[in-house]
Amino acid sequence: MITNSKTESIHMNLKLLSLPALFMFCISMPVFAQDNETGAEAGNAEEPARELSAAEKDILLPGHMDNIDEPVRIRYDFRRSGSFEDGFEDRVIHGCAGDTLMTAPLPSDLDFFSGPHEVTFIQKHNEENVMINSTIFIYLQGDVYEMTRLANRKPQLNFYFNKRIRHALVDDYEMETVEVPYDGGQVKATKYTITPYAEDPNRVNYDKFADKRYEFVMSDEIPGKLYQIHTVIPDNVNKGAPPLIEETLTFAGTESPKQRSAKAD
Image (cartoon, rainbow, N blue to C red; front, side):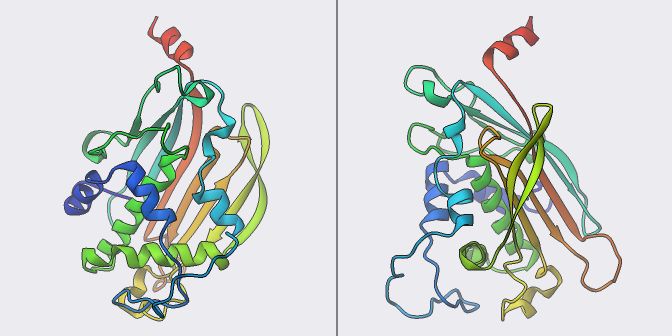
C-alpha cells in the first residue's frame, strides 16, 4: 500500500480521488485480450457483453453493505512487512449506515490509516450513491500506485497494473471455500487468489515484483463482506528468503454508536 516517506507523489495522487470516481475507475475499466507496455488495447472495438465472473461479482460489484442493518463502524487491521523496505501497522475504519440510510447519518466516513500514512479525499464518500465497501477500492488503487512505484514506471501507466488485476479477476483466478473467525465462531467464506503479473509478457521490466500474489477473502456473513486482503511479493531470486513485501488487511470487528457511547462513558 502507501507509505508517506518514499511515495509522497503517489500518496498525493490518491488524495485527489473521490470515492465514487474511484469505484467507477475500477469497475468500468474494459478488459481486452492483450495489453502492451504502453497500455494500448488489442483492437478498437468495444468489449462485447459478457457474464461477470464470480470474482468480479463478489469483489467489485455493489452490495457489500447489504448484510448491515444498523449504523456501524467496521474496523480493519493492517500490517505491512518484508525485507525490501520498512513496514508499518495501522487501521482502517469504515462507517456504514446500513438500512437506516435515509434517516441516520453515517457514524463515520472512511478513515483510511492514521498519522503520516493517513489518506484523505477531496470528496466525501456517500453510501447513498454507491453501496460498496470502499475499503476494497482504496486498497486496490493504492496497490496500483505502489506497483507503478516499485516497477519504476511512469505514473501514466497506473492503469496498466489495474488492467492486469481486472484480467485476472475475469478468468485467471483460483477460488476455494474457507472458514474464517467471526463472532466467537467460524463462518464460511470464499478465497479468490490471483497472480496477475506472473504471465505478463512485459514482466521483464519489473521481474523482481512480478510474482506478486493477491488473496481476497469474502463472506456474506462478515459485515461489509470483506474479511481479508492479503498480498505477497516473494523473493524470486534468493530461494527460501522471506517475502520482499507482505501486506494483510483483516476484518477486526464492528462497533455501533451505542457501543461507542458506552466506551466514552
